[in-house]
Image 1 (tube, rainbow, N blue to C red):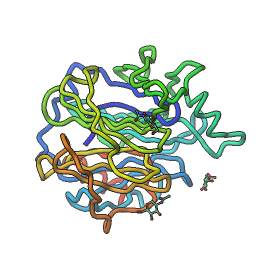
Image 2 (tube, protein in one colour; image 1 turned 120 degrees about the vertical axis):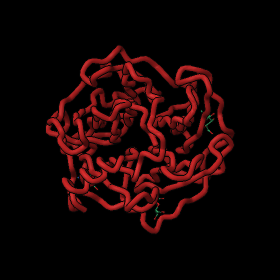
Image 3 (spheres, protein in one colour; image 1 turned 90 degrees about the vertical axis):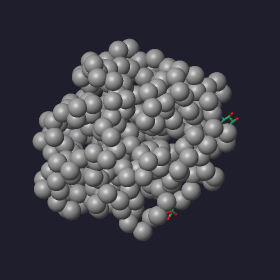
Image 4 (cartoon, rainbow, N blue to C red; image 1 turned 45 degrees about the vertical axis):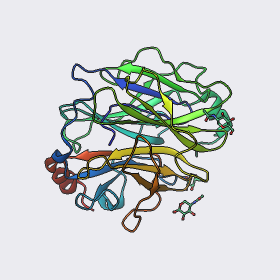
Length: 299
Ligand SMILES: *[C@@H]1O[C@H](CO)[C@@H](O)[C@H](O)[C@H]1NC(C)=O
Ligand SMILES: *[C@@H]1O[C@H](CO)[C@@H](O)[C@H](O)[C@H]1NC(C)=O
Ligand SMILES: *[C@@H]1O[C@H](CO)[C@@H](O)[C@H](O)[C@H]1NC(C)=O
């Protein structure tokens, strides 16, 4: 579960923090939720695609909108990647945000994207997850962004942003794709970051809030490589169980643990897990939200 309203971008590795009067930690009790929504994209169709859980299963999902994208960008490069759904604590305002980047554009190169980055995010707004504004392009980063480090900016409305600053920039290691997981106790978080040198994801823990000190969980979350685009979420029903989706360049593979403080991430069931999902996020949904999504965007 990543109710925390952040945004993590691809090569430019910036994220935005929604500064709100209500603290991001005042999440509803897990039992409020009856399912999960995955917001994602695909290389073949760089637009926002939604998958809804079959009942309250954390590993069984169906694509919504009869297989079609739900939100398509008509701004910037017109391609979006690395989707994140942010909300305020009251769940009355949602922001679907994504990196403005079309890797199929003529002249595109990962090398250039890594050095210069995508400076913009595409933003859609909704009060109910089904009535969405048109897309707007917000240019967050300066012209020299894209340095393979995690950057952050703060915002209240995803329209105006503070000047971006470095957040995680270990010397000698290019890092991208950061994910936060709130652990249910004030100021307690896990975060997941990709080491670009080894194409593996590592985990860090804090009890001091996002700008407190973080402790590395030794090694990497799972063996093998490549892994990137971590998306984590808490189980709606089983207290203390967490899931981690890792993108192996072609699709997400699900993992789980029941001890996130000293985890041994193991493969989660994949029989109902769709193939082809890329870097995205998982959001728990209420019954009202679940019903509205199914009604507007049938499977
Ligand atoms: C973009 O490029 C990818 C990888 O080469 C390819 O799979 C995909 O079909 C292309 N998408 C479009 C819209 O051209
Ligand atoms: C990333 O991997 C390289 C190669 O193993 C290693 O030297 C470096 O310390 C790692 N950095 C982090 C932050 O894991
Ligand atoms: C990614 O994972 C899927 C599902 O486990 C597997 O079929 C595929 O071969 C993997 N791809 C790569 C590039 O490792």
